[in-house]
Length: 189
Image (cartoon, rainbow, N blue to C red; front, top):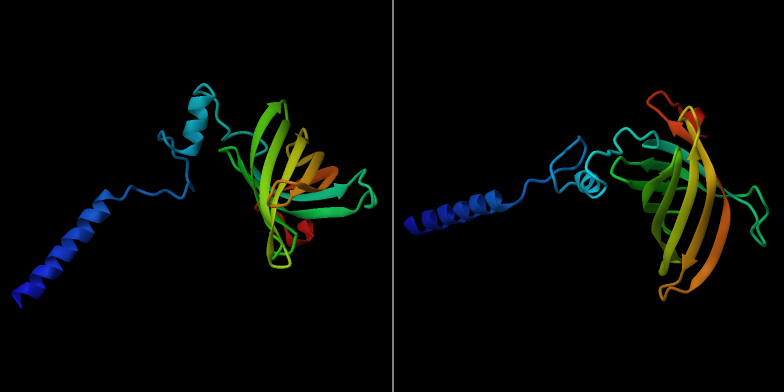
């Protein structure tokens, strides 16, 4: 009996020690200003005082990517649409209208390059018929409206195979409308 109790106590002691050694995790839902977080590292690299927390591009957007000037695809055809979130740490995520089995999420990074002017670079892992196709790269060059509720600009979509060979190059115009806590379903249809 003493042996079983000793094993249980030793096991609990190891769990407690292991728990004490695990670093504290943070989901990033609140503002954390400790060094080591993405936002703090960006602030440190950019001179310390600048913060994207108050940048007007930060938020939730309904986006539409429309074909302009592509051979074989008429102008004004919607190539993609979805919901995009631009985060204060310089990252972005797009939930695309593409079928999930082809890849419906892109992850990106953005930078402000002028007054109300932004560049975005994001990537997705594309699939075709259940097989890995390769990376897709979407680049946007957008300007935020004066009221901060819309943005417009241009985009390119480059689809590559797994060896890095360009398969498709598309261009067009992007338009976006801000989504707020008061936005209804009718507003995003």
